[in-house]
Amino acid sequence: MKRLRLSLTGKVLFLVGSLIFFQLGSIFFLMYLQGQAEEEAQRALKAHDISNRINLITQDVYRIWELVDNAPTEILKPSSFYTSQFAPVMFKLRREYFELDKIAGDDPDLHRSMQASSQSLNEAQLVIESVLKDFELHNISNILSHYEATREHLRDLFKRTLTGEFALISEHERKFVESSDIRQAANRKQESDAIIAICLVDTLGAFVIAFFLVKDITLRLSVLSDNAKRLARHAPLHTRISGHDEISELDGSFHQMAQDLDEAAQAKQELVNMITHDLRSPLTAIRGTLELFKTANVSTEQEKGKRLIDLADRNSFRMMGLINDLLDIEKINSGMMTINCEEVCLAEIFENVKLSVDAWISESGIDIKIQDTDLFVRGDPDKLERVLFNLVSNSIKFSPPKSIITLSAAEHEGKKVQISVADEGKGIGADQLRGVFERFRQAHAGEAKGGSGLGLTICKSIVELHGGNIWATSEVGKGTTFHFTIPAS
Image (cartoon, rainbow, N blue to C red; front, side):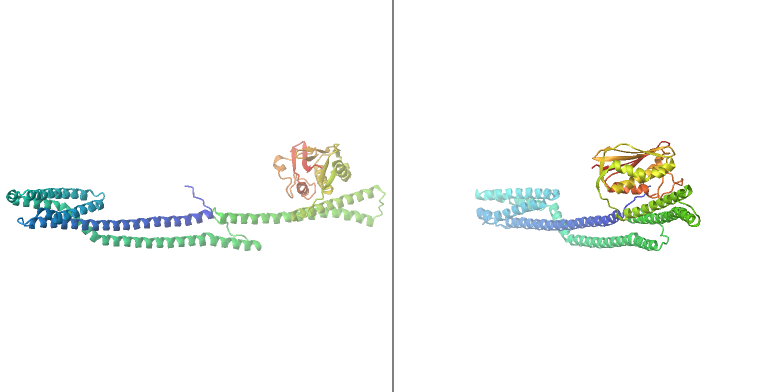
């Protein structure tokens, strides 16, 4: 199974997010417990109210029965009994039933018991009203003859009004109220336990995050800090930090920087060796020539003396070119190289470059061909001449005798002029062509042609300072062409 790779930011967000998610879940859980407690309290209040209402109904039913059972028949005044005693109690009883019905809500058992109780009460009311009607009609004999039967019928109806199920519901609600305190206490204990558990988990989460910060960040940062000290004193670095987050990437970059510094130091040593060799050779030749003039009677008019002077001149020129390359690359590195732009005639630049290498191409048996041009560019004439001289010199080094180097210029898109230096040398392979403008890189490094390996790098920097581009095209066995663009005047 592929291991999940998280950045340092992702790890921190995951840990903090997990803790926040747990806290949100804990809040919802506590809200749920609070809701349960509120629901329990409301249920207890409802049960208490139901029990009270049933008790009131029971009391009122007994009161009606007492009124009916204790009324002396010989002095009973029906209208007074109904209006002053029976009707108010019945009205109150009906109101109690109505209130109980509202409290009952959707309780089917209570509704069923209320319906049966109310039906019995209605029947009892009808019987009492029937007896009162007989009183009003003076049917005393009828009342007396059915007195006991009517009395037992009413007793039975009032008993049915207070059904056993009704009483059971009242008792159940009463017991529910009594046990509610226990349940509410249990709910409060559950809430307190949940709060304690949440605090413990939050504390543990804080310790986990702190442990992660110390182990996965602080300790690894200390390794980076120690690596910086080791790099300063050129000591070996610690093993690369494992992982795939920002710290491991930074450590990887640190190791890569150390490797680049080692390579730069190696390149610097190679440059020193190269400079030592390239400066020593021409200096030896110049010194030998001067020694000959000092110890021998050699006239400068003689052919041998002329050759020796030419040899010393070429070697001093070579030394000067190498020193100029080193000075220019240092200016480029420090950002101190500047250009002084003016209108430049390309035909004059081409001729000046040809004159500068005239003696060299004569020795090499190479010819320089300049295509006619009337184009002008906006640039630094000395710097442009330097670019062309470096490109032509590079072509001379790798061109065979009797070959031709061509200088040309043509209009280019974007109000620029494209200048080209083409030779008929052995060409450059595609794998080497991409790196010819890098420092200390030579397309034919195995051939002892001299030079610092900085000429093309300097050309690239000068062209880019002018706002142009430089590139090369080549075909192995047929030659190489260097192109660069300069703003048109």
